[in-house]
Length: 531
Image (cartoon, rainbow, N blue to C red; front, side, top):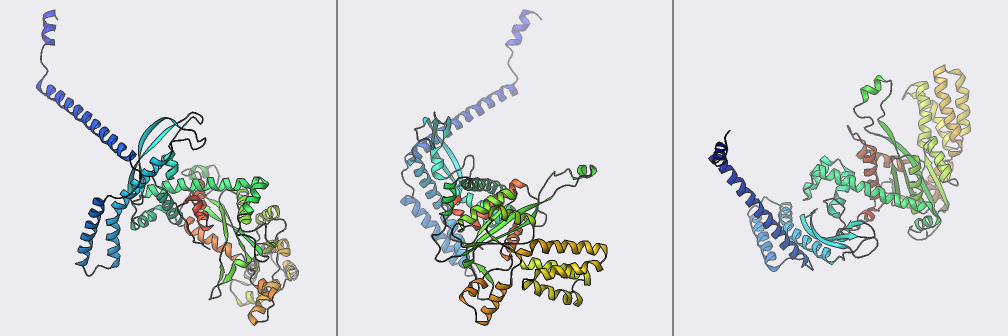
């Protein structure tokens, strides 16, 4: 190619379509630049306006607009006689939501502005201070808050003091109220149901938001629980925990502890079932959840219908194993008055791990085998010998049941031992298991005095001591019912868990039941005591 042809090619104009595309691209870029500049200016103006706020509230004009909207809604409602108070409540709540959102946003901004820009830990002023907006989901809708932040030279971290003051978690979009509601709803029901309940409460929370926030709050609860358990490592900490009881008791009392466990299904080696079975390995699905409840005997009474009722008690639930159970139970026992109790009574079934735990942590406690579990073991022998539910089975077992209630366990063991040689080999093995059960628990089977005290109370001849004794439980019904209540959430049809997930939600549920919800959420001063 010659030099003249090259020069001619350079001066040739681009096709019209190309030139048009270039002009459109330039226009788009200019528009984008203008939008960015406009948004930046608007953001700067909003930040300056937010920084000037010193208190929350509505202007007179905003109040007038709200009242006008409310009047219009009520006027429409008046024209529909079929609509009731529920419709009125819905419309009033909808009308108030935006004004309340504005009030909350401005009040939060005013609090953020009043928060000194200092390090939370070392209290030193932060350097390289800047201003940054953050959008928070609240019960009234999204709130946009501008907060000052800066760098702490000593901690070598960036800090947002206003976030601490407002109770906002790092990288979490929920306000403290929504944190609480998410934790409460998901600890009671699956997220799929919780989002529908939240919608009826006027909260726009998706299933994923509820699930994510509940898990975050569960980890927060576990951390707080661990900090409390750590107090057991020092004598001063134990004394502090013991001092948290509601003052000295008016009279000596017995502290009751009941312990049990149940199975939860988890996703161990999920998707590898076939491969494990080919290797002759059994996939693990079911795991133990360990539970306990603690209460004072003088907090146990009866309803008008003669149903047992405990007015105040503590709960423990964990999937993490026996050692965590032991520490959590000891902490709850201290909180319930262990240091002030005249005596401690532990009631449970015949599981060996329970009594080993009691021996280790409560060596001075009196041990009692659940009466109903003992009777179930005798019924198992009767049904095996004579058939389930037959008159012969009942006739054979009734004298033995009476002997147990009269503290004649040695006679029961003797009867079973004499019976053994007359049975087939398979029945002998089953019977030997029951004999060992009663031999191992014989010293825990003392029921006669309580049964006699209840009979005297019913006949009106009970002494003061018998009246107190009659209130003592014979079985571990309190923990049995507690296990069932937890299972209603954690053992539903088709549910699979992970240990991280189930432990977090159980921790939340236990905080709620123990009346310590306000420790997680100081704004929630709940006086509800669940039993």
